Length: 202
Image: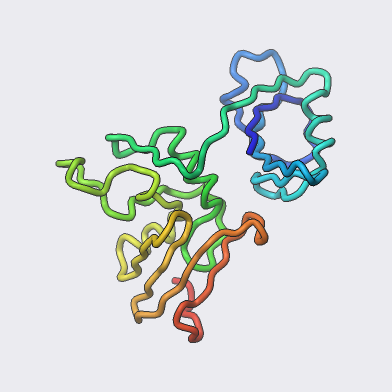
């Protein structure tokens, strides 16, 4: 995975902008792209909202265009456990969780992770942070505001049998598994574990 910041006045795709990255530059538009490259394919998969596959040559053209400034960021290892003692995740931890899950992890929800809250699966203990509910990779998941409230104030619960896999239990006891696979692009895949008609989304 390669992560780059590009500044340009015109951009062919409607990518998510990072205007704060452009502070101090005379002109241009700050953009962050998340490109997954396969050495055996002429295409790259973009994790930006509204984008999917794009020719690697197109990315190269963006980077080489006159007036663009390109900054390469270090790759974030999605399999590394990142931890902070604070309640609020660090920028790196936030980005790691967003890249791992891509969308709200509630069954059938497709809201992009960058517009979600980060939920502590085990609640953070404000009085004694060492007691549990740490702000760490394996204890965080993106939930849109609606489903974050659903998880917090209703009987809906979830477990994470492995990173990026979420097993939800509804108030009636029905269970759903939410996963993300490359063959599904950015969108999560929801399956009902109990093989009965699914509940309606709250």
